[in-house]
Length: 79
Image (tube, rainbow, N blue to C red; front, top):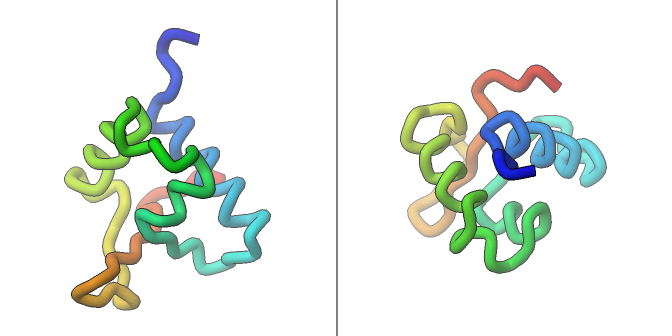
C-alpha cells in the first residue's frame, strides 16, 4: 500500500501493542516504537510521522517524563 503508514496506522498499531503489553494507561516512550515498528523505525516514514505527531501534540508528554526519558500518551485515541 503506497500510502502506508498514515497517522491513523501509527495510532492503531501503537494502541494494539500497548493493549497486548497490558499498559492500560497507554503511556509509551520512544523506545516503545522499537518493539512496535522495529529498531530502524526512526529512519523510515514511521519515524517522520512520529516526529510530526509529537510536534503537533497528537502525542502529549506525560508527568512520568524525566530529563533523560520522555513519556507520551495518544491525545485522541479512537481505539
